[in-house]
Amino acid sequence: MDQKTKTKIVQFIRGWVVSLAAAILLATSFKSVIADWNVVPSGSMRPTIIEGDRIFVNKLAYDLKVPYTTRHLARWSDPVRGDIVVFYSPADGTRLVKRVMGLPGDHLFMRRNRLFVNNQPAVYDPLDKRFIKDIPSWEREGNLFFSEVVDGRSHPVMLTPSRPSRNSFGEIRVPDGQYFMLGDNRDGSADSRYFGFVPRRLIVGRSRAVVLSLNYERHYWPRWDRCFRALP
Image 1 (cartoon, rainbow, N blue to C red):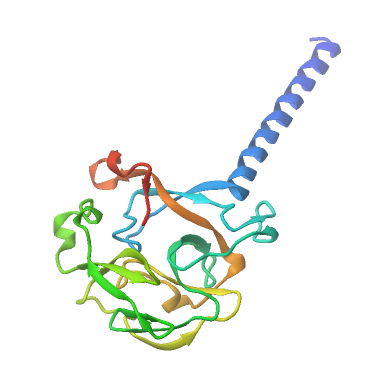
Image 2 (cartoon, rainbow, N blue to C red):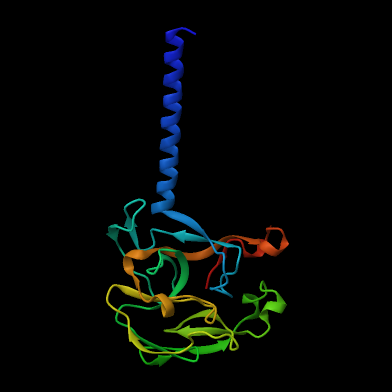
């Protein structure tokens, strides 16, 4: 092989590598800044989100960040109560999915799983059975399901009276620039009751839909009726 041919091969390889690297950088930047999906491995958001759900994460819901960082370039809104958000745990940096229940300046307390926000008790109504149909019947035993209404917005919650948990806490005030997160599975969620308030900068984005759901107990067979389902 002559030198001219070798040079052409090297140039081709370099061009291919650069193009591949650029494509990877573009794709990962899109996931970092604009949109991504999040695999939910646990039941801490039951019955709203169950194991095997892949939820869509809108990373432009509140702000624009520097790719691969939590630094903000621009900000146009803030989370509101009831939003399902993806964020990094202030305790260990783990990426989590919970519901925003306390906003900056709010006063919260809980008595035996009844939430009070700014001295107003949440209202607990019967939950529509369609929200629990994907939970196996044997896993529903011993659990209570309600629609929790706070500030006029409702969402499902699951309670397990027999399970020890931090189902009561005294009045707290949410500091400025921070948020109080709770899992919908109140007795099976490690949330702000355990790791504290979540700084605004650690919130990655908001989720409002399940993109795909795989049933781990049935060889990862898709739960077609959950795909593209809106989250309450």
